[in-house]
Image (tube, rainbow, N blue to C red; front, side, top):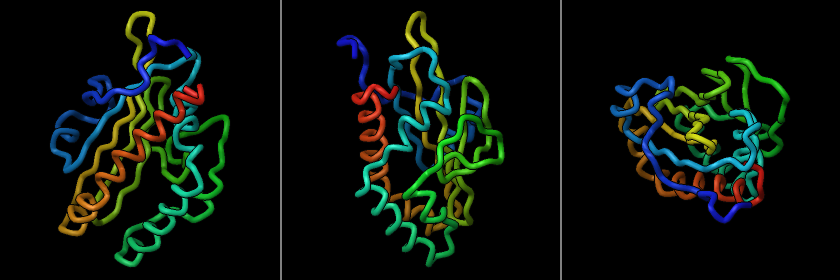
Length: 178
């Protein structure tokens, strides 16, 4: 890993994203993190795999516990197998799942996956950004809440989400998967 490579930095949501700026700015919660890639050949699906398909077991168990609790309130959650043993494929299409989330948009420059519930809708966006000789990805989360439960859930989960996403990206960079 190059000593000049940026490990991880917080940034704004990329302008070239397909997620409309008015939706991003109106979101109850949003975050974006940028990491430089070690290989210019990585696709947005590769970046997703590098980050989200290598969760430590303890994090998977926390997610299963969270899913059990929120499912009692009518929140749609992925199957346990999608958390514990995510399948990686070589190719994806809109409407298919990547990991535990349905894909809403996919191009060579961006992957948008997420889930819609009656309490909140969330989108995870991975945008490939070329800046001169540097290629980076920006990983963004955008959450739109629909009621008090969605807002309360986001208040509770926000610190864990921020830490978890940054941890997963940082680990992917340190392991040279990105």
